[in-house]
Length: 75
Image (cartoon, rainbow, N blue to C red; front, side, top):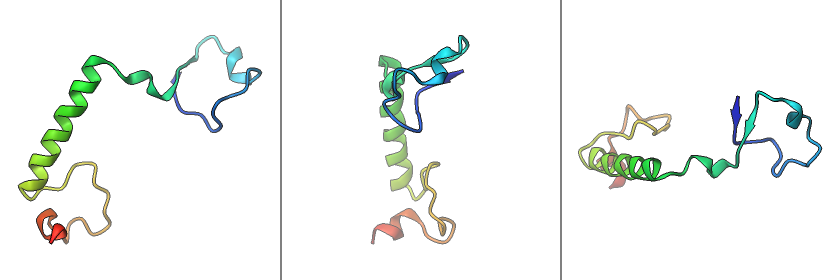
């Protein structure tokens, strides 16, 4: 398993999870790479274009999302 988020951060040096050989622990920022930065920028750009064309971002979690269009929400 690969874990990058923990209940308490930083974990102490004696945390029991360090005993497992099949667990990889990384800081939460471990995913950053040239590819991921480009991918994030592309998604942000597409999200802005979609929003300006009246589409909610796929990540929007508004309870009344189906009742309000993005452009109307801005006015």
